[in-house]
Each structure stands twice: as C-alpha cells, then as structure tokens.
Image (cartoon, rainbow, N blue to C red):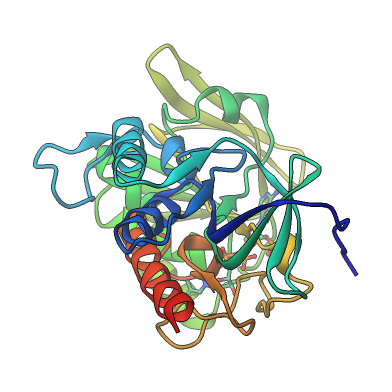
Length: 314
Ligand code: NDP
C-alpha cells in the first residue's frame, strides 16, 4: 500500500499529469470549462513528439511544423486559457482515498478531486550510444511519423513483433527497400502480420541479427553495423533506422489502483476516458496501444476533460 503522509497539502479540483498533446489538450478544455486545472509536465515536457523533428501529419499546418513549435504552441494555448502548468514529476500517487493525494518530486504536495493521467508511453531503444547520437537525424521510433522523409530511400526496422511488421510494411510502401533486423530466427508477430511482411517484395529479413552500431556522418544515418549470431559482422547502407521493439506505457505509479492490461496500458471504458476508479481518467498513449499518434492523444485529452467536467459538476 502506497500511502502518502498525512500533511496539509495544496488542493486542486482537477490534476492533469503529463505535458504532451493529451495533457495540454485536457488543460485547454478543462480551463475553458472553469475547472482551474493544475498540470504537472513530468520528466519530458512535450512528450514523445519532442523525439521527432518535422511534424507533417498534424492537421492545420500546410507545410508541417517542427515538433518543438507544435508542443510549445499547445503549452502556450493551455497556459493562456488558464491552465496552471508546472514543472515537476509526480513520484507517488494514492488513489485509495478522496481527495486523491500525490507526491511531487518526492514530497507530499497536492490533493485533487479528479485526475487525468496523461503520462504517455516511452518507446524502447537499444541503448547504443550511436543510436542516441543520431536520434532525430535518421533514428526514429515512429515510422508513421517519420517514414515520409525516407521516400524512395533504404531503411532498417529493428524488431520482430506486430509493430515491427506493421511499420516495415508501411515503410515498404514509401521506401525503396526495407531491412528487418530480427534477433531470433522467428517473428513474435501474429501469423497474419508475418505473412504481410513475407509477401512484400521490397522487405528483406535479416534473421538472427543484432545491431552493433548505427553508422552516420554530419548529415545523419548512413548505415547499420550488424552482427549475426554466427559471429559474422557486416554493414548495410540505409538512411533511416527505425526502432520497433516495444513501448513502455508510463502507468507504473497508478497500477496499484487502476486496471491495466497485460502490456501495461491503462484500461478505459469503451471510447471514454473512464478508468475503473471513479474520478480517475486516462488519456493519450498511456491508454492507447494501437494508434499512438499526437492527434489521437490530443483528441483523447479532450474526451478526458469533458468526462472530468461531467464528473466534477455532478
Ligand atoms: P512486442 O513486445 O510484441 O515485440 C517486440 C519485438 O522486438 C520482439 O520481436 C522482440 O524480440 C524484439 N526486441 C525486443 N527487445 C529487443 C532488443 N533489445 N533487440 C532486438 N530486438 C528486440 O512489441 P510490439 O510493439 O510489436 O507489440 C506490442 C503489443 O501490441 C503486442 O501485444 C502486439 O500484438 C500488439 N500490436 C498489435 C498490432 C495489430 O494487431 N495490428 C500492431 C502493433 C502491436 P523477441 O521476439 O526475440 O523477444
């Protein structure tokens, strides 16, 4: 049981946890509904969008928009309509009592009548220094976001699950050639997804292979050094390197109370944002294992604010 010390704390009607498209949009709607929300941005203000560069698939920007401008515009909009946006990380939550109680940066800090969890998900990376070096310069964890920049080029996708197969097939429609780097001699993906990959002529599967290093120059990624299980080391020339080895939904703080699925995603009721705990709502990638797009996160932030408004005004 994760109790929070009984000390006097600040009180909010609505606490929004997470500074990504879902959290900021929830802030905009909740502020305009007069709920005076307090929003803690967490460790990565802007969320996963900040790991990409140009965003061309968010409606409203005819020539695309760079990700930092997009997230800071969302943040400014939320702030301008009255969201109390703060830097700080929620380090503990107690959803067993009303009002809900939260520690921020390790100290008991705030109570809230309702909470919107919009903590997002974190893409898994291999942890190679070269991968970090070229992040945003050819290294990406979102083919739907960044694939467009590699039209008619060669790219590599790491992973053998459903996401990797889906992303490889998507990229195969844009790129000249797609290598799949799979660490075993079998896919983890469903039969149907495997068949899609195997029936796509410009996908080459590199079985039993691990990435040793992402190669590049000042302009970005130029290739990948690969080691096969039998010890053979070889390079492939690519312009894009896509990670598809899974995501970690940032739900750990809440799983003692809130229902989560087998992969750690918060379960919401139908297309609403209601969790199994009354007054606790979830929005964005922390509850979305399928779409994982900024526009969907923003839309679900809107739903969460409307659900919270209804709950608080009841
Ligand atoms: P998964 O965990 O299912 O697959 C991860 C893949 O990445 C596995 O092939 C795994 O290899 C590989 N991998 C993990 N770590 C490393 C590493 N360090 N180096 C190299 N390879 C690594 O994640 P997904 O994101 O693919 O899927 C998550 C869930 O979402 C699944 O339940 C999936 O079915 C579902 N999903 C469904 C879709 C659909 O139905 N259309 C689309 C996308 C996802 P190994 O197999 O050896 O462990």
